[in-house]
Amino acid sequence: MLSIRNLHAAVDGKEILKGIDLEIKPGEVHAIMGPNGSGKSTLSAVLAGNEAYEVTEGDILLDGENLLEKETEERARDGIFLAFQYPVEIPGVSNLQFLRTAVNAMRVHRGLDELSAVDFMKLAKETTKQVDLDPAFLKRGVNEGFSGGEKKRNEILQALLLEPRLAILDETDSGLDIDALKVVADGVNALRSPERAILMVTHYQRLLNHIVPDFVHVLAGGRIVKSGGRELALELEERGYGWLGIKDSDEV
Ligand code: ADP
Ligand code: MG
Ligand code: MG
Image 1 (spheres, rainbow, N blue to C red):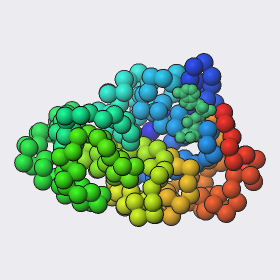
Image 2 (image 1 turned 90 degrees about the vertical axis):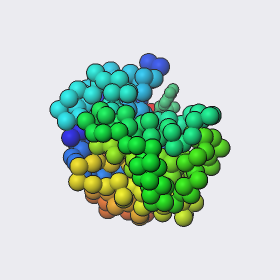
Image 3 (image 1 turned 45 degrees about the vertical axis):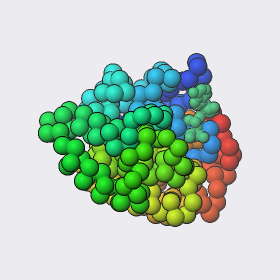
């Protein structure tokens, strides 16, 4: 479904990703781990099509199509979801309106009927409960005064409603207390489906106690230096990154 081949990417002329190879199949959950500054967020941003990052070599194929030729919006319509893609506050636009517009645009793109205001409200209310948000949350302005935990829950809410083919969740665990971590993990687990792949980018092993990944990859210095199953995450928790020849902070 997603093929990343020899991906090199630079920002401000500085090479950050130095040859990434990754194959992701439908239904799989891949965790990307690695020390701070190793290029994890850069990889997410490049997949989503963030224009600050320049791909200097390599290919990314989604369902056999060249993703690199597509703009961010087109990638989103093709089913790539990056949490925190829309972090800005939009005063005067309620979360409900915002989500309904996004969901209906996606449905039209997929050849489905738009949801009526009533039907969308029903769906949105059910989904807010799934991520332990009060439905009153839908009436608030987009991202207006959301706490860290609410932002995270909102990301999962967006993903559940948009039903992406590939959900990229970057550092979904940062700034979460244990309860919120569990809620986000439950939400991610709810996102799992045989047609959907999930790429979890995390600095912390603890999130993977709740979300059992199929594959774990360690990114360091802009390269995948080790791949394995979930046991690799457990090993990292016990032994840190040192045994892989990586310092705890391995900036590119
Ligand atoms: P991680 O998510 O693994 O912590 P990042 O991908 O955020 O790592 O960063 C990798 C390296 O790229 C770091 O050295 C960081 O300073 C640099 N970098 C990332 N984004 C930018 C940017 N927009 N401008 C300048 N440097 C950047
Ligand atoms: Mg970082
Ligand atoms: Mg990061």
